[in-house]
Image (cartoon, rainbow, N blue to C red; front, side):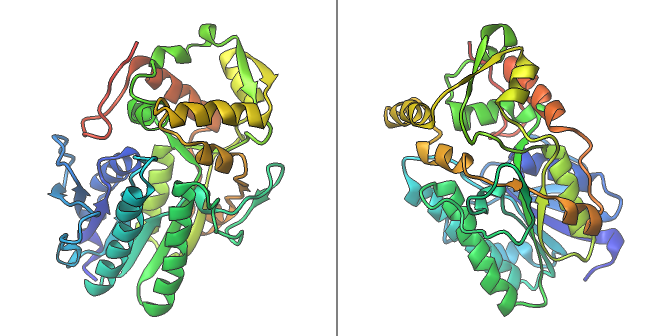
Length: 342
């Protein structure tokens, strides 16, 4: 390994929601000598000590081992959420592309791999108690996102045994938001024509309260801090990442000044399924099913072993995101470009 002051870090998916935060933090870190960001499209954004390489992980022609040569760590963040109507396509990018990354890490003898898993990898679990990293990671099989995250968890189980000299860290964050991700996430989950200004409190007098809709959130910059700590430490294994408090209709109602109204699961799912079937909504009903079943996560291990704590509460995260949604906020990369609709 090279000297600590000259660490060379490679980041896949470097222009997305998490990637932009991770690259920025690493580029400002005096212990990092250089950052190489991988993305399908090179951005105009030029942080200090950062170079870019255009790579499509879904392509079998990508020479990832050559790109990773001499790196001290690879942070694998790349992920395609769309198209949800073509799961074979996301499988090629996310799963087969992820396996190519893991194989290239081994071939290039990179000593550290930090992989972006997710709360979505977890099997259904409790909403009134928090689970630690030992909870099963078999996902919700009907949802492509969960199925793909869970498959890569199994792939890393095998990778760990086959390559014990590679220090593998698996991050399992909650739902990640920041002001600059608002336009991207609106396009991914709500559709490119959903007006951001609809997220104004005065336009939402009531809020659907769906049984099981209780999740965790985290600011993307707080998640990026955990990735930075993982790169520079000697920890291994999985880490849950989330902020308090848990988010449900009651909390959102207080934030927006809206009254929660109970809505049965079947009615909510039928509406989502109809919109998805008509290509009006990008988020699939299968992902909705998964969200209702995701467990709440205990983040004790990240605090005690990684020395990580989020700086923002989940309430602060959502307030910032909603402001970004209303204003069409974005960032100077292709996935994160800002756009205000309505």
